[in-house]
Length: 440
Image (cartoon, rainbow, N blue to C red; front, side):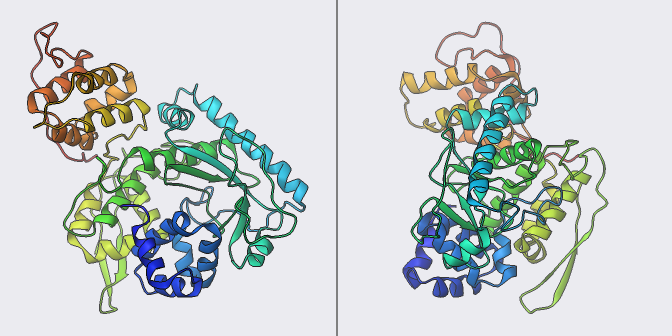
């Protein structure tokens, strides 16, 4: 999805009138409203979004929650005003929160857990920005004073990692660029290349790790319009890509299978399945039984149904979407391990075209980026089913023979004659180029 397009259209139609924009959003379906609310942060600013959210019915405003709360995965997110009774206490806690997140990243870079290590490296090498926010001491009251009743005031948007510090005015100021206004319960989101984390009292290091892994995957999967991870389907294209991105992020984030904050269970246990109900276009209740493969898939779907109303609506309404959800039993994607090296290789491949003569430097970049892959990267890419979007991307940009050489280079850690030389040894048979999502 191209960021900001829907939001810009809405602003062009209604201007920067919060009431008119809220009215336009209220008339939309859940999926469209959620996407445009997210876009509005970049298109119109946090204060304006807070005003709009305050004018929406609670049920509608709540669908914009980006990351569930501790343990409940979408219910608990932190009180709006919290236990920070003074500005000095809030500023002190803000510094502690920044230091805690920085420590999580430093330790994560040395972690034996590849997903965490890669996600922290993603931040440390600047593939995304990071801002750590915390509530003001008067979060609810300040939001109301800034014409966004029901929102939560957090700070400091002007301090990007690794910078620290931050403050806010004693008296609420409508034009304060450092204060953000969001619905209570937001913990983390990735948008426009920036990862935002809202830290509240009681949030532990492992919870922060889960948020980082979850949100970095949203960028690493490159599911946006035009990205190599974007699925092109006949209908419900945005919903399909949003579902897959959330499914991947919940599968590998939030601590991962067996971790402290994980509640999604095992991919090795069979699904028991359940029934999804929603209203159809006539207002009648329609029930659709699921046909899922494993426990983890089922629990993630159940969480997404509870958190995002459009999931149930689309599942009930569209057979193709329903088939996709039932078949998406593992986190298939272009870069499920959130590797900066796979990202670099994907970018290098994306420069090339199979019917256009590429420069020696462009071709050399593919070889060099392949040689930089580590063992975890190679293990992921060797799984042609789970990494299918990556290989679809490679086949779209490389002639067949060079794509086969790339596969062999990843499988055997040699690029052979990709640049025109002879292979060091007889090549193995070409690996399978097909395969779809696996079923457990």
